[in-house]
Length: 159
Image 1 (cartoon, rainbow, N blue to C red):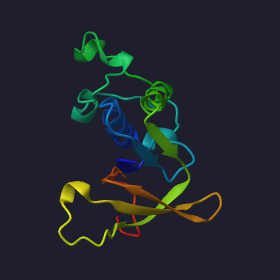
Image 2: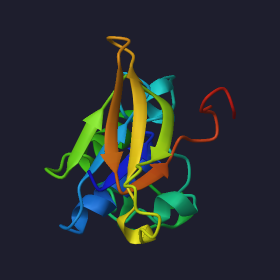
Image 3: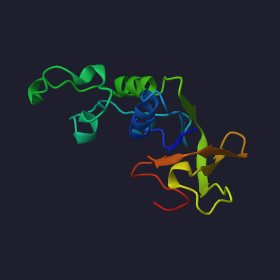
């Protein structure tokens, strides 16, 4: 693939759709949990809604249907968890996006081509992850790695 995205929360899925929307690049999203969606997938309580469109949500490149219209505070629509998850699922519903869930990031390394003068543009990475369903280690090659793991995540035991 061209781009490997570690983390299937809102940020990771938006990046995946932006990459795929170029029509030039493919990507894979590796998500540790059993489903994409990040904190919106893992939190479920009465009244859970998006209570304000913070800058990252306003900047979404593919605006969700509930983002348009009058944005004055008294008329601002506050989408529920299910609506946000539907939007996140729709983001990765693209032929150039692969999603692998239940995958734990292990490490990445620069792929050794043997050419010391290799241009950075042609650099390849090997990303290793553990399939949490089987316990097996798997690897993929990628030109770019994006870490979109969120603030409550750890990689290799490091926050």
